[in-house]
Length: 236
Length: 236
DNA sequence: TAGTGGTCTAGACCACGTC
DNA sequence: ACGTGGTCTAGACCACTAC
Image (cartoon, each protein chain N blue to C red):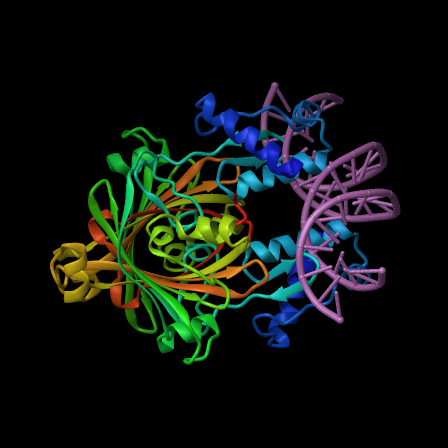
């Protein structure tokens, strides 16, 4: 593990263990530098990482402060989906409806830069949170990258397997959100009424080298759909 | 303007002007360093900024590449709302329904760290995109920070005024998303049917020093609600 | 093995906040 | 005026990719 990641992790752990609240001040840079025996740029890099994660914010001339949001039970839009689950204590399970090798839909092929004749792994799951239906998920994995899947893998964390089992490095993703109404089929899977509101999240996942490897369409039960997002405005 | 921002801007402009596509390679670091007469760390900082904005991705051992998403007409969830409008060519207008000084709701007070007896500016607007209703927006501004607002300001970009007119520095924000059904009142403002699907986005905007200054609730017309989001997974 | 991006350092200087 | 974070540099060395 890299030094700046290590430092970031320790600072984050420190905040959690001491239950620091929004606005509480952390030690100044000089202190952190000597405490972690690191240069200014390295500590700064750690803090930038934590700022990106929404854990701290830095104020020039003043100090480094803890950032927290106030609401519990929200799903983080940026750190879910094989990145990390953010729902503390919530119990996530999956029913695998379908798992097979097939040809991609036109939409999947377009998003994965594949031909219609190429093979994809197709996974359809219903996911539950604390016993309630959370979402219906359909995923298309480029089979030339994700070369093997089975029921055991698919009923657990597919992304962990992709990382650890296949040694692939997951990079960035593009997400598209739509609001709409449940079709009869979707309502059936989610145990809801046809025409009820829904949130569709389509995501194209890429490896660090830019190759798209997974296109997924997730339909959320609107009653469970509380999402959370942290933004920084210093993007010009 | 800082050197690394300048460089980032020029690289971005270069990409746009030459209409570089997803995956196209940019000059290597050494070239960029001499081209912009900057050190490696400075160029790297520019590229990190562009990576955060979703403009490029960097691959160790290989190069720097253009990142683009494929769909047009989506609203960027992270760079709207006083950050920047992302919808090219789309015409955004506002009808100001209400503008007054009042006491905050309990929810607004909680999110703005105010007492119920404190004053807030309350703004209610309907926003249109290309002549169609886009959303209904209610905002509460901490009056001790945003000391003055009027109809002219409010019918244009409030955030530009806050930045330029008041000289305040906007920092980070927390966003909460819910899916639900339109109330009769909301449906009326948006010209839709009661019970139609909606997306509510509640946002708490903070200054760079961490002070919350604006709490807003935006109810989107689901027919116009196509949102876009770019994520990076290297947040551990 | 050559090329390319990533990490880390030490230090100079700058810009902002606070008192 | 002082303390604190932010920018920028030059350079050493490391890790991954591609050939």
